[in-house]
Image (cartoon, rainbow, N blue to C red; front, side, top):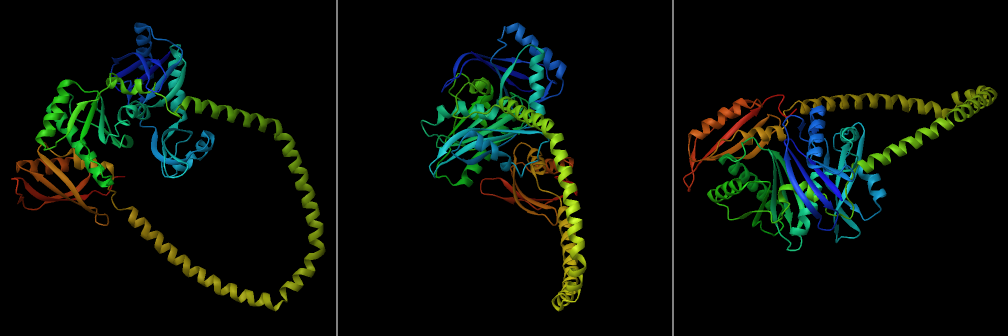
Length: 474
């Protein structure tokens, strides 16, 4: 039997069962833990986390063997990539190339999970992940302190995908699945029963309040807009929620109806929806993620290389010294015999004299090119000094919106750091609240807006312009 554990900021999901195509779950439950020992999957208080885990293992008499850990970590970078249908060792060898545009970690480990085979030739889609080896080692040591040996460490995202696939694939559903875990919201888009996209967001409203319903609907709207940009030809008609109470489900439905959405918003039809991450880990995949296994193979390979280097180091160094000495002696004798004759012939050769003249001309051209390069580098530094329009700025624009006001980004002029948006609202006082909130966000040096224009539905339109501060997005 497998004990699958998912750790989050204030909650631990526990699922006991066996691995199978649809997961053989025998028991599943959640336990609240004290806030402060974990943050976004990162251990912030190791002693407190160890104490709470030891208490849970003792209270619920959990097995200490075949324990697998599921984590939703900000230290892990994941992306969907297209790979050949080759041996796992071949794909793993090439995974670092897929993360060339990501911030490299000092001692990274890589793994992947197969999502689906593609009809275009012998290709497949995989969810690739880059993790921090020290992060994996730290969790292994924490569980060792309480006498538990971890046999697997995997991603919450891929665990959820494994549980959702047999639910959504048979009916080829095109829908949005939203998984709420504390204040963390993972929104997944599914097209024709296949995983397509995921967006992770931190919510700043309290659970159970009216603001939560509106925040969920805003995320639904964003996912539908993203789906429309894909031009898939399908329509999103269903939204499934996981990890919400009945009150929160009703709040989401009411907010969606008030916003004019005609959607079926329901709880995910699965008995494990509240423990989707720990239960999903028990579902089989053709090739699954296990960073502990990857880390063990890395350490074994590193140990073999070090042993070989220690054994051959002295003989190789001695051989190198002898060869170098022989080469030096032979080179000196050979060069002395030919140097004088070669120098005389070379210096008096008319072709070489012509080449010297050409070299002088090329040197002048080279100096001119260096001047152009310097000018280009100065221009590059100037562009880098522009404020960046990134997720930090976008988040400030979005979270500053008061209830009853929506905003859409229209354009961004990087050379001026000028962002233009269109705000829609019914209550004109919301506009002043939005401007005040933008001022307090700390990302903008100047904020302004034009006069209101009345739409046909009674709402007002206003154009908002902000100038990003010099350090915005950096």
